[in-house]
Structures are given as C-alpha cells and as structure tokens.
Amino acid sequence: MEASTIRIATQSLNEPWDTSRVPVVLDEIAASLREEADIPARLTADSMTIAIDVATDQLPAAAALLHELGLI
Image 1 (cartoon, one colour):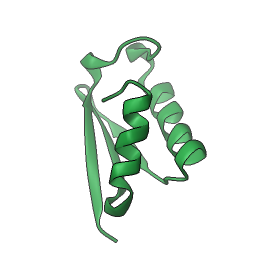
Image 2 (tube, rainbow, N blue to C red):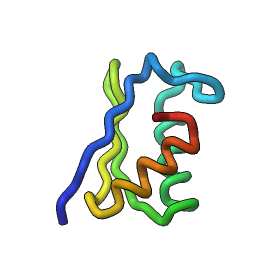
Image 3 (cartoon, rainbow, N blue to C red):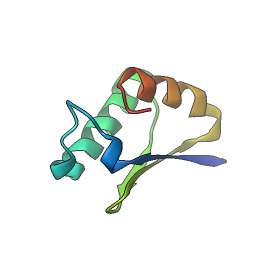
C-alpha cells in the first residue's frame, strides 16, 4: 500500500482548533477521518506541523474532508 502525507502548519490552525492542545486536535482529526469518511490515518505532530498519513488512493477523500473541517 502506498501512503501519502498531508502536512498542516500548526500555526495556521484557527478556531475551533486549540493549538495549545495538539494531542486533542490529533484525536479529533483522526476521529473525523475514521467516522465521517472511513479513512484510517496515522497522525503525528512536532512543534511546527501535523502530519497525516493516509493510503494514497484515499488522499482525495481525506483532503476533501480536511477542507470541510477548515484545516486546508
């Protein structure tokens, strides 16, 4: 399975995303991908970015959902 990574700068997160609680943000994003689009994802974060790894064939659907959530 090929994987693709979507990276989001943590400093670009707006309401309702609380950048002081990145682990909670990761959980909420993962839950949305899983529950709303049936997309399993691996999420990680460092001090600058959130990385979302998804199967490449699910990349368009993941990007669409992240756009709906106001993340990209």
